[in-house]
Length: 188
Length: 188
DNA sequence: GTCTATACGGTGATAGAC
DNA sequence: GTCTATCACCGTATAGAC
Image (cartoon, rainbow over all chains, first blue to last red; front, side, top):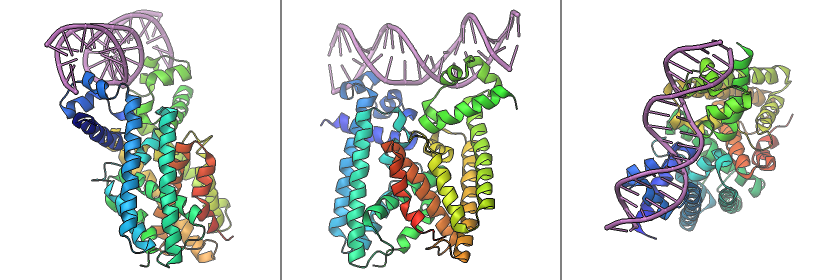
């Protein structure tokens, strides 16, 4: 993994998360990276290749981040709190969304291999929430969990939707208000 | 309001909701409408003008639809159920999202007047949910409502996020599973 | 209101020199 | 690995005839 490739992935990720897959071009990336358009094609032959690399790297990074949260959280409630903070941080200054939400919105423009990777990422995240909610139900640190599998999808939807609302208004306060009911269910 | 203008709004709405604001062009619209690109500019001088007209028309239509749901629902719970069904129908065959969610994702590409209209629409919808949840709390038809204002934003986030998840997977079943916790709170 | 024609820059992508 | 040069096409937008 060369240094330039990593830089392009970093810039590409920021671009997708702020402007969407259709909203940025290799020209934008080249300008930001300080190289020429043609050089990008050496690392990612097509824009579709870049999109796939972006979702795969993001899925791996998020899995690591969630695992770290889980490892350091004494209760299910603390783990859920950590995940909420992760989604909050992904908002930046209210100008970005998490990669999965951003790519879901542009799903119609992506190749099947890319939406497959996106769905695999969503499923892995949902499984993590299911595990955490299950733990929180058992240790009594999260209220209102009936079926952990169903609740997991509901929590994920609320977090991604809260990002959507926050981004429309450009204010992180909207995110906080939209997930307040989630935080209220954490008792310890 | 001419017939062609209405047709262009219909086609533009479908385009934004399936491919996003950046994902369609006047050429696509012209092909679908059976007229030339230049003719579209007569109705909507710029693409930004079209975007504004689309969000404004959608906001008005949704307000009407929600008002109709509210008028015919005997309880807060039935009104909430009607709203969930509205968001479910907006998914089509799993290829579209509601206009607000679609435009929120592309917020960075829109003019301020357009994001202002988008936020006004989101606020109006949130107020509707607040009123419905308040009613459901009073008549006992919706469980788990503490602060109606906070719950309203949470419900809206969950619905929009469920659309995002459903669209990524292209299956309406995902939407149903992501909003199941919401339906479970309706008791009558 | 719709058309043809066109302007002008941006788009992803490729070939081949260094 | 990066560059220059170039490609064919598409993007929004405009002018002016009908």
